[in-house]
Image (cartoon, rainbow, N blue to C red):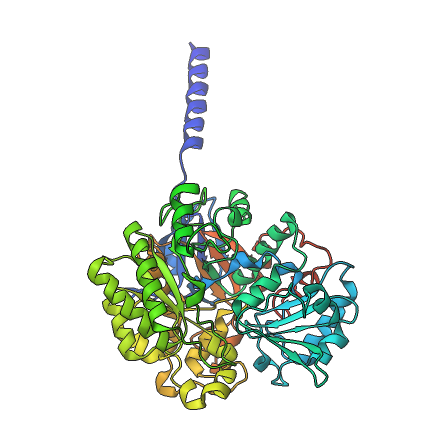
Length: 601
């Protein structure tokens, strides 16, 4: 009998142990405490701790309240009194175009032209035969102490024995002799699209300076040596990591020259490996389809027949809204693209052309229920566009379909009201912070002071976001734009935004956190630190609400979390940062300079 009791007792304890081991622990997955949390919530605007469970905010409160939610598996992070904000949401950028990111010398944040040229020269020495030395956008001459563009002579001196292209936004490019020969300058091989001006010297020889618009520079990028599949994957991973560095947790790819589905292969690979460290909704553009009557027809054909996908459909295997189709744009017709070159007068589109194409194209999109975005920089073109939109709405009601105007630099209060009445939104960008000094030269300081009409836009209550429009037209660092909205100063330090047109720090932050969620149809799931929202947030290196105005532009993240997972760590949190695979190729400037000035890992 004693032996039987012992055996039964052991069986009971064994069964009890197995049962306990199968019980799911109820504690939080992650707790961040000892923080200064700006929740974005009116109910509880401040807190000191948050808990995360299954990729969402589980609870927000005091340290004492939240630490009660831990168990043996909870990861604890001491924020050391740092400011924590909702993750920054860049509602208009171009990640998919950055598959050559590792091949570009990044001039973002470089303080002097002298150092920028030194970087070019250093990279030229390590660039192997057959490859180019490139700087493709993301910088501004006004960020340099010298406050000027480089000269073609300086570029040629820095890179004497490899083809070189240095591109300033979508405004200008500098080509050395080897680059001109490779591109076929002076021959039919060079894509001299409308608006392209190739500078000549007094003897009629090409100097290497090209002034043009978007499509010329996009064509040139396809004519240089292209990266391997492995290099493309490495490039996009590095580009996303550099965005995480500044606290960006969501970024809408606002159309790429590489369309869905084939152009999204690198994103799908990262997603399958759980290495897509950002939520990436996307706008699709079937650029280069010569078999369709228009870009809109090409888009409808692809997403309804060739590779069917529904608006809002998520392609990420594990992360909610991780890689999601959000419609088409930002180019609906190349003939209607008014660019954003502030060094030149505005490109004004023929009204009849705008009316005809917009009514034809957007009527099709509305009928199919496909959301869309329209790139328009200048108010004259916005007026023509809205005339067409109002005519469409009378015949084929928009009926709540989400659409937006992208950029809208010179929009007037009258047109703001018209957009709002039609149910649209406006996605601004920070190009005035980067290139506003050029705008002043072209249009006047008086015009710059009200460009864009930030105060009127915010006060109107229209769905509104501030974006970067990176990586060519502007920098991917959102704090440059946030600083400009608050201080009115461009990267040169010049005040180019009127005091009455500036925003408070709270208003500016909303435009990069809560504001963008409307454009993604995710208002109830992200943009705030409240229970149920995605666990996407950033712990800052400086307190956004207490640092001086001059320091705002120097803010970055020391800990970035996406879907409850640490995707970036710096300073005291560097050990928590996931290790990036080796950057390819070995000669990449990222290995020597990093992606942003003084940020080499």
